[in-house]
Image (cartoon, rainbow, N blue to C red; front, side):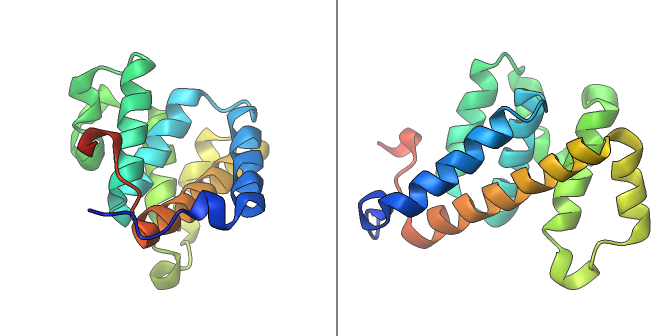
Length: 149
């Protein structure tokens, strides 16, 4: 895979703005590992190799067991390996990524709201929107994942 363009040079102000939002999400109070799980799951769904590689590495560095990492795509089937909050965050992520088809059903909102405060759910939603933007950049411009260098 060859990178199509250098987006950081093409739009430094735009990338800086995304970085500012990333900084907000990182400081939002949501656990870092939870954010990275959400980032990884969204990136898997969106097919962003660069982000899958990056967030997998981040999760491993944070101490997430490899056995849990490899089951992120099948978290529904992994039983108690994922906490109730992690399951709710992953479910919310998947729901938001299907917004054009489902328009976020009430039961999906209620399930997320049962695990997260209003601020946490808002910040989690911002995080999903942010990784979606990064995935669009990654899939659209094809930066080389660290694993492929």
